[in-house]
Amino acid sequence: MTSPRLLDETDPPAILRNGLPDRYLTPDDIAEIFEVPKETVYQWRKERIGPLGFRIGKYVRYDPADVRAYVAHRKGADRNAA
Image 1 (cartoon, rainbow, N blue to C red):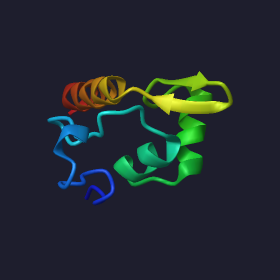
Image 2: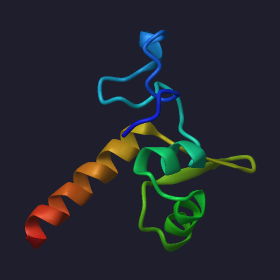
Image 3: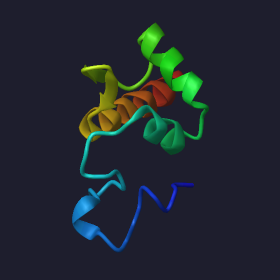
């Protein structure tokens, strides 16, 4: 289930068609989207197994397009494994 904070219907221009905000996402956003602890998001980044993130100064950010690509890749990998 996606949080109301990410899908704020009072600000439609800020939302992309796939339900992700029209802005770079934070590790907190990624944890909320995937319903995992924030520590898991940092572990994914360290092991290079999660969505592609990048640094802006000392902050990690995620492009919504990269998050969608990661989900599509995982769906394809799961389909092929089944």
